[in-house]
Image 1 (cartoon, rainbow, N blue to C red):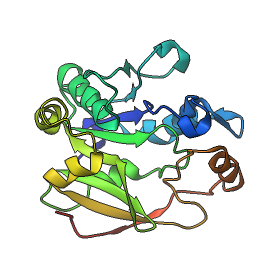
Image 2: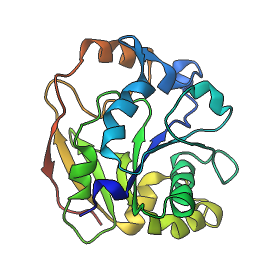
Image 3: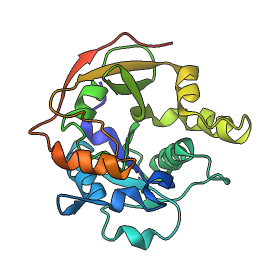
Length: 216
């Protein structure tokens, strides 16, 4: 069981947004608010140690984000694993009370309000807890122990491993499946069509979960 005070929320906003014309997807607006504002509203109350944002470039573009903006600590823009490493390193250095980091994408406006609680209470003898919906695992919606940071750094620097799924497979994960009702709670806004679809699918509440057996 991982309690709320020991969880740091990490919003991953380092994508290049190529299918959106190279814009920062978390700053796109849905219903008059940015996607980032919606993610903060949903995830912030679930993380007792606060929030951090994984993003490179000028942090000022994110305005009054309620936490630090963390650039990658390894070169070459290796993707979400580098953002995760920055979050784990920050937690280890600055938040001694934190045992786990909850990662979520910055372009997912309908995240469940009970995400951290359910992932933190999942049974299993493997370190990572992962969300899924519609039979699809969401590798960037997961609860990660801070203790994985050493092996993660070795994976990025020594093995040049950039695939989130491959790193998860090394350690194993318990997967929780959310049931999709009116809207998939893990819908990502990757294209203009996704943004238009999200505007039509404002959910009334979060999804429900069902457990799956641990993988690997």
